[in-house]
Image (cartoon, rainbow, N blue to C red; front, side):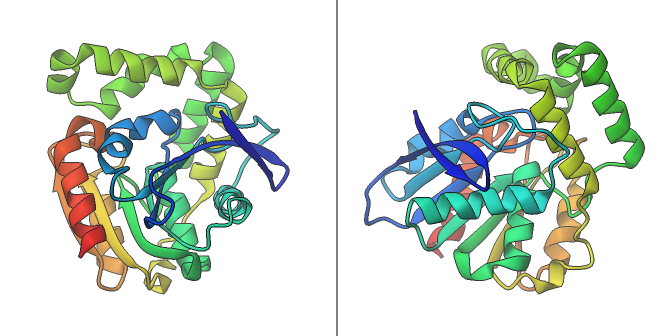
Length: 259
């Protein structure tokens, strides 16, 4: 395991691939860790230098008193780049990771080559929906929400056909620190960059899942429509499209980054 200290947080990361290759960074969703990107990392490490990390409050990274903010999570990533002496990177983030990507694109475009925003929105959910989620975790722990989350993350067909994969992802969710999860729930709840998307000048690909109830396709289409020149791809998946429709996801990613 590798760790760096940045912005007062201990961040767990992994970097693999040829040192001279372009850096491709992946940022996880709320309630997962960097292993959610295994399908892409294993496929792409011959073409890119793959950087993955656990967002604070997740995986092996530090759990600090919340609430967190997307700006804070974005600065954690910048600290990681600085500590590893990486000037710029392609950035691919899903859901919460996509919000971090939007913040980076708005505020520090000079640190990005290309930007990929997956199953995300410039504003996700409502105050009430996040309050209910936070209260459920505070009262019942992570297992109290796990089965409902799996129903949002994967279609019924995928859950029936790939039970081992769903069980593995559910275990990651259930093992996420409740305090870290709640802190990041607040970060997602409070972020709204709908009026700033036009500031993103980085070449951007937006990926949506046609069956995603957590960040519906309309959320992604809005993002794509308001970022100048953004490309858009819609996959046959629910929320974790990089897992459910992994081959097409990876294909769209490679085509965009290589174009």
